Length: 125
Image (cartoon, rainbow, N blue to C red; front, side, top):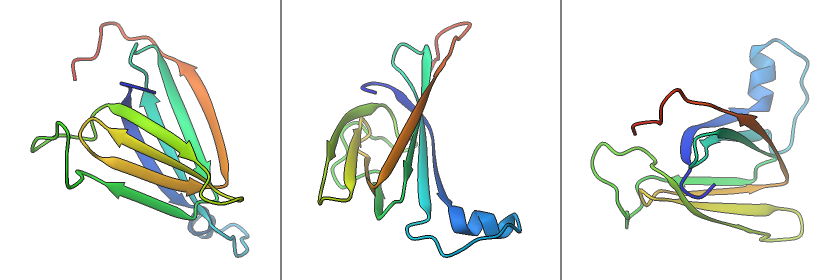
């Protein structure tokens, strides 16, 4: 993901979504999901990352010590990330963006998909 651009970060509450759709629901433990879409540096693939059964999430944007953030900046490029296990049940994904923004997600389940992508001309971001 290094130097990829984040397209979107979507946080959903599965239980609330089912209520809105007037569907049957039962109390779901950790009903939050987070989906992150990233276009890679080469601009030829879009990665959709889905985190489920979320226990903790944190978005610090911009952080107290931004790297290259300037007023009006977005999240900027994906810099570095680290995947660890804070305990035997959960994973933790920490992502540092070039703006200095930090994302932290603690989750039990993860899935992803990759979509080929082609631009007529390179992005001018």
